[in-house]
Length: 402
Figure 1 (tube, rainbow, N blue to C red):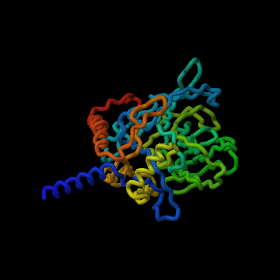
Figure 2 (figure 1 turned 60 degrees about the horizontal axis):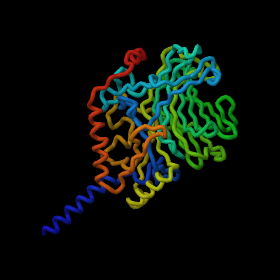
Figure 3 (figure 1 turned 135 degrees about the vertical axis):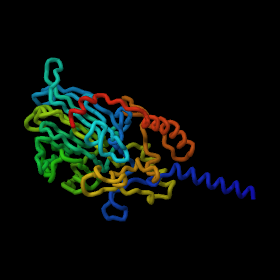
Figure 4 (figure 1 turned 90 degrees about the vertical axis):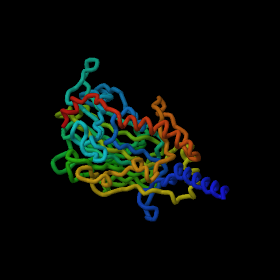
């Protein structure tokens, strides 16, 4: 009897360990149901819920960029510069509501372009912001951003996948092309045979008309890249697709989010007519990795749970993301915010920033102890961070934006 009880306890203990280290999504994340004739499964994810981030330097998924281009290199009457001070978190007062930030207005991450220029070595520069994903091994995927543009004409908001100037999947929105009822949006595929914003080949550039003012509320932009098509969406509705696969990127890349101005009347225009804030509520990327170790990790964890059944469908609602007047269950969904589902174990987490873009921690595939070590290393410090006091860096400037 004692032996039976011990055996039962061992089984329960083993089952508990397996539940800790096995994810509901070990085989990937799918666009559409796997029973749908048109679906795609991606192995890795990056999710940033910017309504909850209090100090952006603690988000290891992103590398803020700092650089300068003089007016000649920037192709405008002003130079361009990106600075850390232009990246300002405005986290939600109540994370269960996710509507109002500590500075007022919509909670999220602000990318700022001030109205006034800055003199650098006697030349005029306009400040802006750029974020690059730490992961640079993205090859195929679905890439999504929750955003609200500035109300001031004179800036450019870019969201794109990037390898180099000849391999880029691009969305660019010019605030001068926004009116009370419509917004024009520029969709570009940069290829080795053409596709720049101002000199695009047929079939690589499209201007779409969005039937709303993008500075009035949060909306979602998205593009999906599969072996057979690149398709752009707004609020879950398809707006353009390219199926000429000879134009597609052939190498892996990363995600870029940027907000800038150089005064060029043919593109960004500007300077903006006021202190301009682009509000980001989230970025979500579900993608395949080009890294051989990541590919091996995926095969092993998927085989460990019996094959392709452990695939989670990515929610793709039609309509703007909802924040005001909704229950927590109606807010935008994140696998990483759903611990009950156990949907993101064994995904890469970066421990620290390095010149190479972050150090990859080994995955917790076969050990319950590894899960506990992750909790001791990350869970307790994160809990303490969430309960601690946050001191805004440039609160006075943020108050002027709302």
